[in-house]
Length: 475
Image (tube, rainbow, N blue to C red; front, side, top):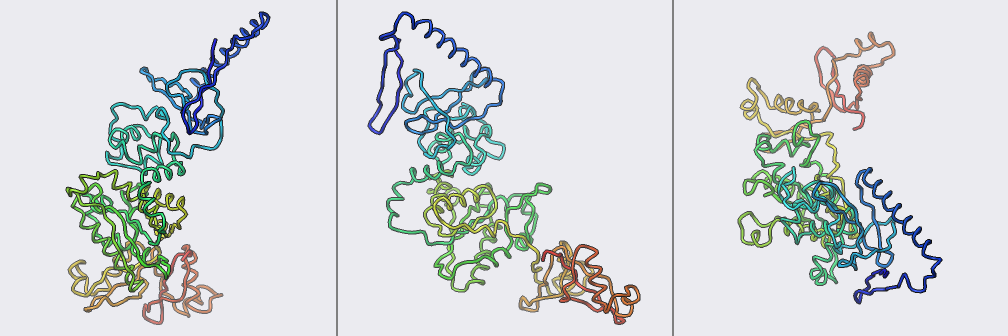
């Protein structure tokens, strides 16, 4: 009987054979029989254990080349079998020696078989979140049914498909980074002597601002505060202007690039996304006079370039742009932005998470004059009534205002804030023997409701009494 162990080096395939019967003494044959019987029983036991346990891939490596080798096969009856196949023995079915190893694959080199059963669905249906190209979802949810097979069928030359063919694990940043370098090796060669210099800010645009449901919400609300994408989901995608007002941009920065896709799932019906971009650009230039702010959009729907490249290539080029050009990458909400941040980190660049995790505690209302207010709020007489009404949706108006020009004013709103009851020094001392002034009573009420009184904002109630402005304790 002849066994073979196959391995592969940089020069090609090498086979090493040995004859199992050569030089075998007659007394050794029972020993060989027992040895084979033991191996058979062990294989049957292992197969039974695999059948009982949930399928979960383990990173197995060949001792010679360290590449990921575990594959699975989906049978016609729906069962799954597990096989290990050497990268150098694709045409061989001979027995091969393997060993388990903790470190996962780090190369974008395609495996001989697709790593997961869900990869081999021949007629996949569109994933539940849509039929578009979703590299971030492939990377973060590698084993979702239909997801990988859909991308392999629709976009076989994309980064998503390269990642699927090379790796059976989700979130393997080393493999994806290597895929990017392999796909854009010519561009890497051209940029060999250049360094990343831009601050790149990713904006989540398109459907989160311009689909039918979102268009019912005034754009001004998105500029003021986080707006829940769909009631009850707890998902927020569009950062308010305050996040960009507080963004730290190094003084030596020559250029900021705003990148995003306003056409995502809405096509050319994206006026609100474009308005949001202009608002962000204006806020950055207001905070940093003289700063160059560029905009990076994909080609518009229907354009010749978009038809030529396709949506997958456009998204892949955005990934490469961040990897090669973003000295600082500012992440926004969403899985794709998170993925680009991870790619920037892997490339040795800095990532600013402040916009993604920005928490609004105060903001400015819209600008009103008396006439504006009367039109928007029936029964109102002055602009202050509209400011108080708008601030009251999330908290209260602190009483501070700023001029917008042309006789219009905006008010300072504080989330979860409120005004206390009215107190005077005399009345406060009667009700609270330890109180020295009305401020003590105001502070006591604020404290009882989980807030605090800063003493900065107060209003007269008449007859020597005053109310105070209570703000959340974490402000």
